[in-house]
Image (tube, rainbow, N blue to C red; front, side):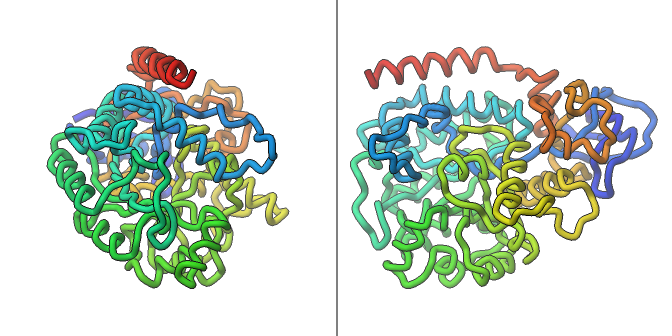
Length: 456
């Protein structure tokens, strides 16, 4: 057993001083004592629950910051960005894929994410041929998570069609495509490795564009009874219009009517919903997976956050395209988008009297853990010991009252709020540095160099 002693920690009933956290060898918290005598390792700052990252496409870290060149027609959108993404993935071999994923995961750990749900849809080699081991690239994701030391919820993606109603896939989508039989084999292989490698296994039908209704039912059955199911829905208005032409229903509306959506599900984006849809979705106890920085980058639109939360909806945040890897920035963008849309401040505070930053962090951490299928998001017995030690030497956090720390970290001029990170009871970041960051960066640079040479 390990004991960590925090000068202060954010517990279920608020900030408490002198908190001793006992952690079993399996990485679970066994006891939390506030007002405790000093024992165990003394932490150098106040402690909050670490954030689960509920939506990542880690390989897209390779194109972060490289999509700002405007097209001659000036009609840039999600759909033109998607073409750049296809061109990126077309050239990545398995070694580069793992190196890029490991870099993304190290950056996640340093930012305060302790676990990630990887929405993993690249399955085949650059020619679209299955690897000898159909789980080759999934194992590379597993290896990258082990290197970074963060928890993993692995979501193999079923992707069979290029548009609603079974439309043909594009040539550049060839690395994603599977039959139901191939997908069943992939899930069976990954199920055999879950206990050994310590990941949670779920499934991810990519979207209603990519999956027919009969396939969706079979894909959901590939997951264990209590496993997470994630799907993209209602990210773009064009997607909604196409879905209505195909089915007569909007994407979220269709899922609620036909897919038995419940608390296992995470509806990723759900940017464009009617009032009825958001109330009906909230009633299922499913989680909406938000990636506000990516959604802003792609011009998706603004999620109806206030109405959804007032309806009792659940949400978490993720890094999605990994152009931004920072849970504090995701929550800031989420709240600021509401302010711009509604022309008010502190929109997402709800009925809580707590400072807004604390309210947002707690909710995203707890609901995000639900989406990952893990016991986390709180500092309490039975939870994974996933902890962030805040850096009170950052000028934005220096001398802040405890009640204002998360407001300062999210909405203030804080650039490096994270000092240490514990994932599953083990330190993966100390004093802002990851234990493997130099080796991971070296391999990342080599992968990008090979990628650039391949595109020349």
